[in-house]
Length: 330
Ligand code: SF4
Ligand code: SF4
Image (tube, rainbow, N blue to C red):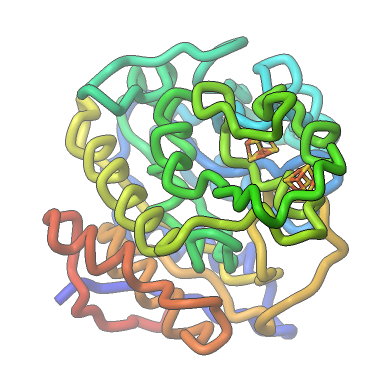
C-alpha cells in the first residue's frame, strides 16, 4: 500500500509553512543534482495555475536539501501564448515566474521550438527534462474537458514531451464531421489557427492538433468530439506517462498535487474562475497513481465529467503505481 501525505487547506495556518515538512516526508533529500521542477505556469491570463509563491517555497526547500532546481514546462501544440519557447518565457514572466523571485532558472524544456529525445516510436521527452538528474512534479488538480481529470499522470504525459508526442495523444480527440449537417458557414475555417480545414470543410489530419476550437464555433452540430474520446485519451495518457517515467535516465521522482483553485478545466485556458470543489490542501507521494487517486477521491469522483480514474487503472496495469493507498495527515 502506498503512502500519500496530506496537508489540509486551513485558513488558520498557511499551506506554505507546511510545504517543507510535506517534502521531507516524501524524501526531498534523496533528490540530488539538477532537479526539474515540472509544472504548468498557466496559459496567458489563466488565473488558477499554482502560484509562484508556492513554487518559490518548494525551490527553497529543494535547495536547502542540496538539490539544484530549475522550474520548467514545455510548449503547446495549439497556437496561443506558449506555442514557442519565446512565447512561453513571456507568459511565464508575466505570471510571476521570474528567476530573480524564484531563486532558480526557468527553462522551457523543449527549447525555443521542439527539442526532444526520442525514446520510442511515439514518445519524445523534452530535452531539459531528459537531461536532469531527478524530477519534482508539481501538478494542479483540475477537471478536464477531454480527459475528465488532470493531475500528475497528465502532467507527465502531456507536459514532459515534445509537440510530436502531444499530437499523438490528442489524435484520439480529433473532431469528426457530419457533412449532412454542415451548412458551409466557414466559421470553423476562420477559427482554426493551424489551417487544418480545407475549402470543402474537411479536417486535414496532418495539420489538425485537436484543439477543439472548431467544435465550439460550429453551431449546426456538424463537428463533434469522437466516440470514446475520454477513455481513449486517458489510455494514451497512461501509455505515454509510462514511457516517459520508464525511459528517463533517472528514477528519482516526487509527486506533489495542489488541490486548490480546483476548476472544471485545466490551466491551458483563459477562463473566469469557476470551481468544482472548495480548496482541500496539498498531497505528496512517491507513487504517481496513488497521489492522483487520492486527489480524485478527496475532491469527489462525482464532480468530474465521466470516469476520471480510467487513466489511473491503466497506469496501474502498466506498473506505474498502486491503487491501494493510505493518507497520512501531517
Ligand atoms: S463550422 Fe460547422 S457548419 Fe460551419 S462550415 Fe464548419 S463544419 Fe460546416
Ligand atoms: S481543425 Fe479544429 S481541432 Fe483541428 S486544429 Fe483546427 S480548430 Fe483545432
